Amino acid sequence: MDEDNPQHTCLLVEDQDATRAWMRDVIRQAFPDVHVVSHASLKTAWAWLDGLADSGAALWLAVVDIGLPQGAGISLIRGLAERFPASRRIVATIYSDDAHLLDAISAGADGYILKEEDPDRIVTTLQRIERDEPPLSPSIARRMLTHFRAPPRAVDVTAALTGREIETLTLLARGLTVAEAASRLGLKPHTVAGYVKTIYQKLNISTRAEATREAIQRGLA
Image (cartoon, rainbow, N blue to C red; front, side):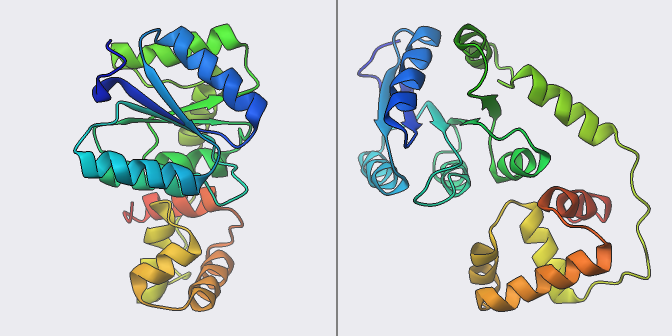
């Protein structure tokens, strides 16, 4: 790889200085010739991406922490999927629960890596990208298998959703936040939040992961 080749540029977004330096080293171990551009906030990352898009350059890889204080990194994953669809979008996080995992995959993440793992294992996991394999931490791969092997819940036909509730559930399953769903629907966030509360009550669920599963079972996602 040529460091000056934008096709081999990696965007790293991580707000913790020590972790950002550590992750940069891990990425360079995995891909010695890659050019790593690191940012500590969504604001500076978006500004850099705007410049990249204006220049017509490509982005090869993005490694994003989704627990950023300035806003959910999941929005950056979604934006990258829309604006740089050829890029590989990898989540690097401490969160191993279904809700964060499914939100990330729905938003367009191509991989999911836990930062708590041994650095050498993370290097090996990242290198799967060059073999066109999904870079997933082993425990995350097992969690995904467990989630999708779970017996499907019977859809309660008495829990009929209104048109707006169906639209809201569909957008939630695609990884949009309440605010983003409200913008898409042309409604106020508190109105959509009310729809979400009603949906959860009708379907007897309490998490985004369960909402995503319900949407899949109903053919909405």
